[in-house]
Image (cartoon, rainbow, N blue to C red; front, side):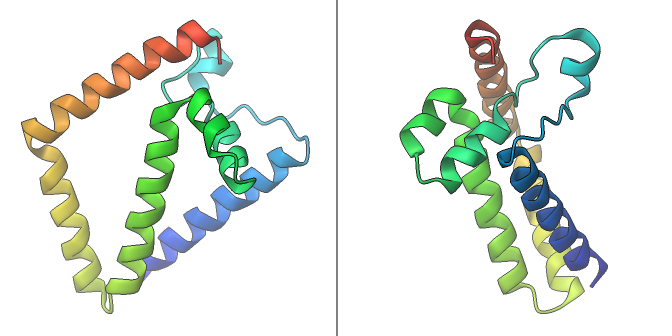
Length: 127
């Protein structure tokens, strides 16, 4: 029950943040950017979400391709978990399964390499 409430609160927080930034409020939430003026690997996430909400998928891809994929992946995961999990035990089991999948080197290592290469691209773009 608490995990499901936490997921809903997190989703509402993200939606609120996106709506506020779409209305011109400039929020810098990345500590790396705030402290060192270096873009983080997920730089451009807000702009990617804005483009997706406006239906501009091509622009979202040019900003930060991994953000587009991760936004769609996490939205699908949250949707499936909330729909599928009828009890807290099922939700915990689903989260354990996802954790086990991401602990496998064949999943973890390519994911980390993808994030590193994406980060290089983000720095080069100056996002």
